[in-house]
Length: 478
Image (cartoon, rainbow, N blue to C red):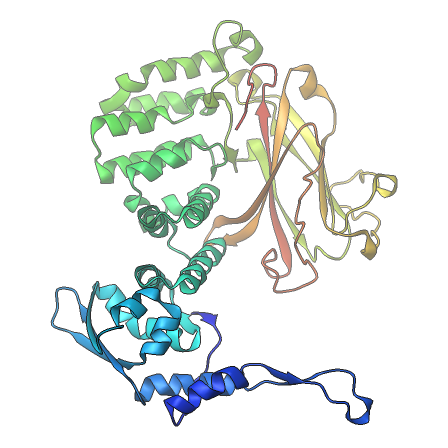
């Protein structure tokens, strides 16, 4: 459950007495010269007022309008004895609707009719308790009756629960598109991109629309185990959705086949029912992938265009592209670690590795005070001063061998939690080879606070990813 606003129940006498108290009880303050008192004294009876407003709704005292709410397709009618003034304060539509009548019949979808009591309660006291399944119907009511504050409150609730992994992101995405809520749509899309591995394993995956699927497949910030996982997820979606051939072929052409090793490509061609049906539509892409793996990328680029996104890795969690790092008590002191990644996605580079050194400090240090890397991974570094500020993360190669091969690297740091065997990403920070550290890394994090959204059981869960980019060939990596 989640609450929007502030209100509690109580008792009340007269509606007209309540109106008199509105201006007096919310926040009264007066200054006194007695005893030389300089500071003002606050008299706050706002909670009492909210108690009484709530009782006003429950008992219908001095009500002057009746709302009959009928659930669509049923004979069920819920009756609310309300007050024209309070409804009109929040909703211009109610003010217009009730200006010349004392009774109105409101026909609402079943899910909206079921939460209409919560909606009316919000109009009286500015607070309600909300559950995940009630978010969309409450947002619909707030939109229909033009209650902007409730619209914002429910949308904020949905975005907050997406960040915590609790919200039905696919359903909320489609709802955001239907209502034109661009901020919510972007929040849903970002969550789905960062947590695609979790989503494709859930019941929500089959409800993804072709439009949403196309949005996801074009992104380079998708977080998954590898490109093969995305191909298998697409197979599942195609098997359930059974879209027209043109939709299926467009989706299959969005897979980045050069990111799949040749041995796995051979298996797909031999075993995939989807490729058996649509193989001709992607035959040129499969040939392109085999050619890419057969030669060095620099040699391949002499004959073929490699400026497309097909040659740019996504955020892969496989060991070839990065490593997880769990930092216990991250506010305590500095830490360091190291890991290796494959030099590039080409089969030509499959056996070549780059070693990366990583420094985490709970406080930012100026250049003159930066500690050197420890020789052994995991060795604690000298503690930084508390006054030095926000956390920082530095990722540097142990050698410059990758530069000689014409490769630069985009570094991505995922911050999240493990839930049901999946990495749930809450934040992501990316920076390129030109910078050793993420400039805004955890800029607003309070690592001292045990219930911080950045911590799981007082530990900071990171996943470090390095994405090779052939910088002389790819002009605008996404």
